[in-house]
Image (cartoon, rainbow, N blue to C red; front, top):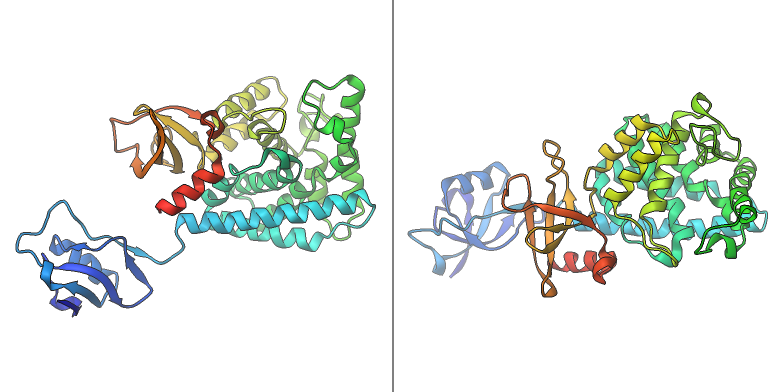
Length: 390
């Protein structure tokens, strides 16, 4: 018989189907037995007043291996990722309109940029991992659109990590969103050339920075800081950058930050003519550039700390011959994050997802950081599979 029972009358061994009051605030991950007084007390402490009991399954000796788990109905990580994905897609549509306006000499719509970057900032301030995960769901034929959006997200995460003021973060996000708008003036044959550019082609490519600056300058309401961060994204500390060959202290901390974000996204993105590097490989390249005095070494280290040794959303290969996605960091043990295993390599097939806290599971280790396309997978299908599993 299925009956509703007041929490004060439940006892160890009863089989709970659902929480009936308060309705909607909590839900069970699965129906299960009450295995201990501690579980019942946990329900009480969370404010649960009534539950649905299946009396036919009441046990005198409850199964010790089973436990009752309740969850808040606050948005799950998967739901937050989906929201972040919607904002990312909206940002791409805005970016498309910006390129069209720039190409035709129209004013850029700063209001739409401010709105969507504020939405990104809100998500990042609440859960930076959600957008970090979405950055890995990319389309190689949409690099021009996605790159500026991604750099805006990355510098927002970076600024959040550096504890910068919200207003400064907003201006940095806008500047990064606009930083490559001048690329629409560069011929596609040069922009998407798979091989090395000739000197003349590279000069044409570099002209995009000046085009961006001129376009942003003509945008009503844009701040000096947003212009500065966009203008300096290709400058290098050793003075060999462009368009102005700034060096050392002539480059602001914000200009140094966006150059790191810009290079990182370029390295990790796949395009029609090349596959991107894994995040870990990109980190090693950033450090090498810092040693050459192109990038700020301290900021590179801070950027890596911001994303984590294994960034959220990264795909890793485990020594159990499985693939897993990094779901969250372990601050006390950054090389052993929390992951979700989802794919077996021999034979190659999806498997029931398993949450693994590597910090507490000594028998499982990360072999290396990999890319989904190395295994004929893509991030979109992985996220969709995990959403169904979740």
